[in-house]
Length: 136
Image 1 (tube, rainbow, N blue to C red):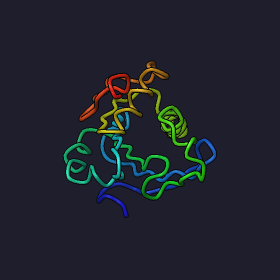
Image 2: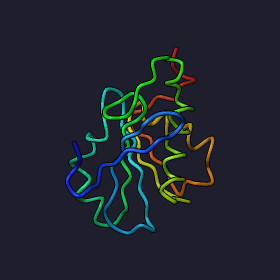
Image 3: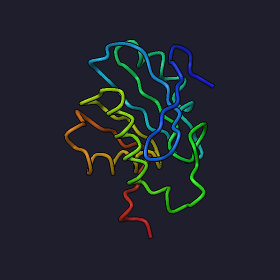
């Protein structure tokens, strides 16, 4: 399933097949949308039409969710590895800098991305996230 106006594709990142959607406005203004727990990139379907007017959108299904591959070993579902998946996807798409909008567990992925690859971010938003160090 693909959000209207976006193109759905698969690519190989970090040894898995990842599904992502992309398209929209200005390719010089990439906006990455990162979904939360028990969701897929489709969670963004209601805001995509407005956002794609001005931004080039990249919306992936995180490792283990939706149409992206799920590794059989749960230890391969770390936030660091999921952040690296996004990094590799963005490099494949030729993205040098972007803004990232994230939700829930996707916000933890985005936070890890921000710590590991700050040079790629022009801005980042974490919605509905309690930082990991505050969870017992």
